[in-house]
Amino acid sequence: MELPIIILCSYLIGSIPFGYILTKIFLKKDIRDIGSGNIGATNALRTGNKLIGYSTLTLDVLKAVLTVFFIKLNYPEYIYVSSLCVFIGHVFPLWLKFKGGKGVAAYVGILFSIDLLLCAIFIVTWFLLYLISKYSSLSSLFASLSVPVYLLLFLESKNIFFFLIMFVLVFFTHKENVKRLINKEESKTKIY
Image (cartoon, rainbow, N blue to C red):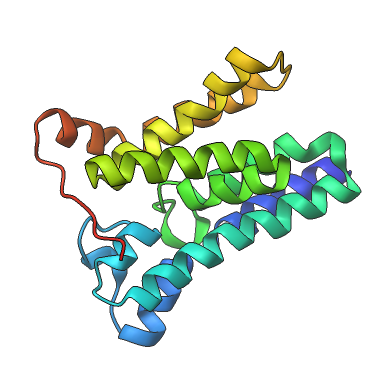
């Protein structure tokens, strides 16, 4: 009985659309009508309100941290199931007809809860690529790939399959960005 409740609660918490909520409350706008139409932190920054953008990022990370860390402490055997459900909830939220964010902030929260070193590898890779390219999407893709690559090269981790799945999911959520990057049409993001 525990597993179905963990799956449902992880999905529902993951699907809380903070970018949508914050822009609706404070800007009286629908974030889906701004920029890329995505509800995540990068698009929230495109509203022109950095506080909304950074608050969206923080809350999207925290919803994953709180959920996955709770599962880690109380039901450690289900940590990867819960992590996947939080991510899927973020990308396909019930509340917004299953059209959500790209999952990067939720993934950072998941990594933070599972392994601080993997989280640090993700964040450092993201920032290095961002400093070089100024493309949030490209940085997210490489950062997501850096985790399974690190595990493959330096650790014999039985959980590498989970992190490969997460990379594939992040790649899937960025497929339009990849097309734009290939066609040199992707817009750069100013995060500061």
